[in-house]
Structures are given as structure tokens and as C-alpha cells.
Length: 170
Image (cartoon, rainbow, N blue to C red; front, top):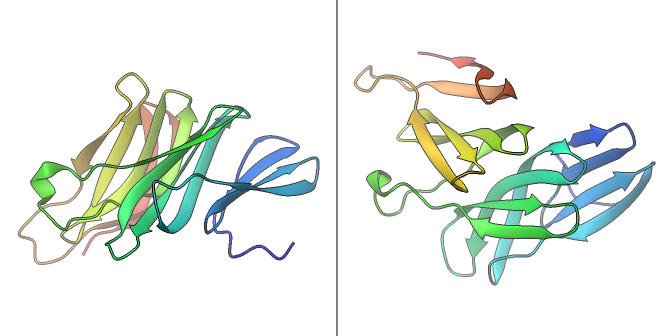
């Protein structure tokens, strides 16, 4: 339909799919696509990379937002069945200034739990979101001082307590 690159898709029902793109979500219902503009936190460039929809009325998409004249920041946008709401993802204070959270490989097995991957200093970090706190928690993966870096490339969760990941270790 002439839309920009789409690299992820989530279909919570046989005839409903959502696909993130540069600054919008493409929604396809019964084979008919429509572009939904996602609200931005301000002037700048929005790039959504991943989406996961556990139901037709609950979706989360993540990516990066670069404010005009600024550096990229992690962003999430959530759908409640009516409205998409966008917010920046805070960087953990321990990562220091200039660090960025850019989530990828998003998986939301339920409406109350999501998991994704990000990175810090060459190491993969698992990030989880819980509806109860409406916040992200970060869990480093790998060992420091090994001279290499770890990389988890894909993540999938069947529930909040059952996830599988694939990647590489030096």
C-alpha cells in the first residue's frame, strides 16, 4: 500500500493485525489496511520497531524517538482498544547520562506483562513491564570482565513466568 518498511507484526485475531512503521501503526481488519498516526511526545522523529498485542484491545509497540536536535530515547505506545498513548521509557539511573533505552524483540503474553531486550555496554539486558507498576525493570544478561559481549537476538514469552530466548555468547 506504499507504506514504509514494516519489520514486525502482531495478529491478536484471525482478521486483525497491527504493524509498526516509521511514525504510525498500520492496522489491517479483514484485509483492509489503514494507517493510525501515533502521538509523539514532541517535535522529532519516531521509529517504532516492535509490537505485541495479546488481545484486539491491548497492544504495546516500542522503538525510538529522537527529539529535534537531541539524542534517541526509548519510547512505548500502548493501545486500549480506542486510543494509542505514547510515553518515553526512562533510562535506569545506574546507566549514567547519555545512555539510551531502545527496546526490541517485544513480547506481551498477557495484558499485564511484557518483556523486551535492550543493551548496555555491549551486554544484552532483559526489560520487563508490569501493569501493576506501569514501569520497566531491567535485568542484565551475561558476565562482565569476559572480554566479549553477549547478545540475545530474540525473545518470546508464553506467560510472565515462561520465556525463551536465543542468541550468542563469545
